[in-house]
Length: 459
Ligand code: ADP
Ligand code: GLC
Image 1 (cartoon, rainbow, N blue to C red):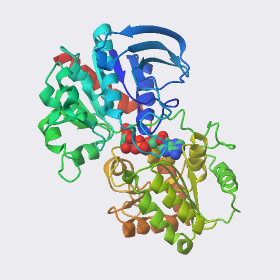
Image 2 (image 1 turned 90 degrees about the vertical axis):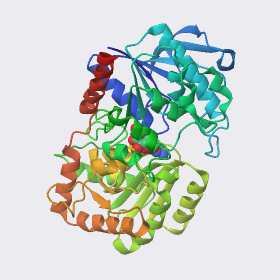
Image 3 (image 1 turned 180 degrees about the vertical axis):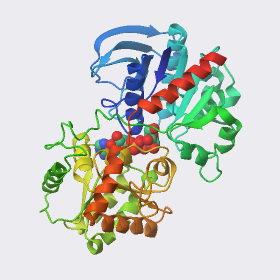
Image 4 (image 1 turned 120 degrees about the horizontal axis):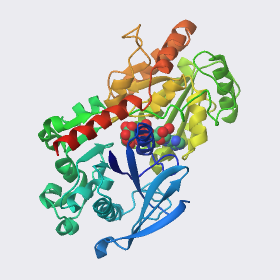
């Protein structure tokens, strides 16, 4: 089975969020199972590819010149596509955290290059991810069997109709009342549409949570489903993690206390025996960062401290900084993207807060559980599929779930979590359940493989 896998991100070198982890984790697991996967990634510049065997891609003038270079990037085989205006310091955002104004044309050109590459390489399956690659199927006359994975329904690649005439196939699929919607077109044209958790798949069909695409997804019937993401459990492993100065597993949790002590020292605080709540996130409305900042008001009363690492929206970063300035050693904010600190927060925190407004899958709650940090989450999307409330289900619970997305419900869940944490045997049980579940890509990769087999057998 030969799969062309097109994505805008690939961990660890080109990473904004979970799409990068998904691409690296799923492709790694598929390759380990013998699937021949060609990862096609935009060339954002400054990526050291070895060796660099370059070919010209025969794209229309508006998308060119386009070239593809194949080689290894950080030890992983990839195909890097260069198209005009793609090379930027950040794949999508300017220095203020706003989207580049030409994001749609940039990724339209990338999708055109992917389509040309598909014609040259004739894969058995083409696997697209999010709106960035959504135009590809419209540019192909006779596309191979195709899968679209939707990671985030909120970003659809809506743009002016200028380029519609260049779609070879079903330009009507991309046209939504005069606006070209790249995700909608791919939803219509792909043989199978997958989103990244079963609960988010169900939520996507509802008018209030479907981001305007619910009916379109509903129309796909059985061709639309949810497959929960995994995480790379070799990379996310507290027993070997190079970012931690002590290592531990489920049998040696005492060492986790050392990791916590180091993190507290790194934040410039004295140890005080209170639980530390961690949060690692993109700063966007989706992640409920404002709700988390609001919840810092109970830290004094419940006796807990909190650290937030986040990058993205400037106004959310400013708000976090203001709260931190007032909070003394109750709340610390670290602005930016910091892989090492993220690992140390998963390792060093006792509780992990993720008050998302919506969450297609979410990986950080899984990373937290893998590192023995107890998740406190809202009951949405992939959070619903991974976290079970330990008060409601005392023999199964692996975390704490706020029953609605609201300040009071999140504060209540946090308070319940802190209280349970204070009971050592209860705490140990909850941590054990989170740490012992298999969060790896093994089972999800089999499900994607099944999808590939289904679409190639009926095509
Ligand atoms: P999303 O893709 O919506 O941002 P996910 O939970 O799926 O959310 O994945 C986010 C990924 O990015 C995780 O691997 C997480 O550890 C990482 N991450 C998020 N924000 C940061 C940050 N500021 N610094 C380092 N890693 C981050
Ligand atoms: C998106 C979603 C997140 C998901 C990730 C990887 O960024 O916001 O929930 O885990 O994609 O699929």
